Length: 318
Image 1 (cartoon, rainbow, N blue to C red):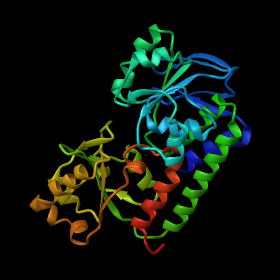
Image 2: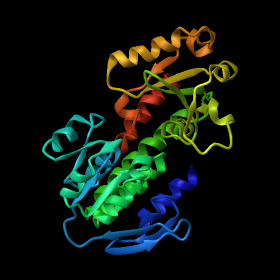
Image 3: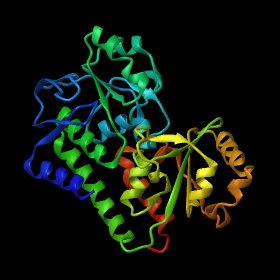
Image 4: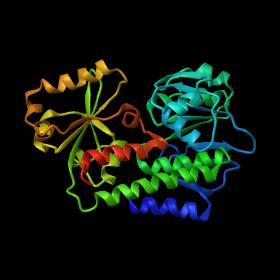
């Protein structure tokens, strides 16, 4: 945690931005981007980044839309989404849509003639690499699985938009909020937390490598799923037997839907389970449904709101 913060502070102090491999996160170089074609020495992915004129960019997911606009940018294509602030939704209302994040329209993306496509680190976006490359369009697959990667994305987007100072101001605001929250949680009893990610059909538990898992660690809370080692995934199917053994102090439910009827169904499906009623968090009424717009996806520049939300749940007297 301290090392991550120190790395960011060093980059800010020297005026040099980091560029990392979009696949494995290895540091490729520090500097100001003009024109770069570089092959990652770890996984051999070749990336091309151009600068020097107003770039036409398309973002495929809400998190990158938020971060790119926070860094002073504007897009020529964006996803259908409601996981953004009302102010940002108003700014992008006239930007052409390229479809839903899990299934973007490749033909529509190509028709927009972007210089670069900002994508999420999900299988369906990886599968588009070849099609876009054949059309001469590079794709930057951005990992946004933890707090530190928000800062890395903002630094990179600040260079692409020619607004590095604006990007650094956002990073400074977020770092200040996190430091204040960590100070408030210092020396407090560390709550043991189970994070349930749910849809109407399936339930998963979030591991420490997930975005919310990383965030609760930074707030001095303990993820009961951290005992599950050797997993590369960020989520695993929820096991009620495991939950009963762990007996968490707090349960957080992240709904994967905007629809209240779906969210109600998630809670109903869980509450009918006899084992669920025996959990300490259920008996003490410390089961919380988290806001979709702050936790179902990485909230980007609004991570300070997510920090405040969790802090009040974990340490109401802090």
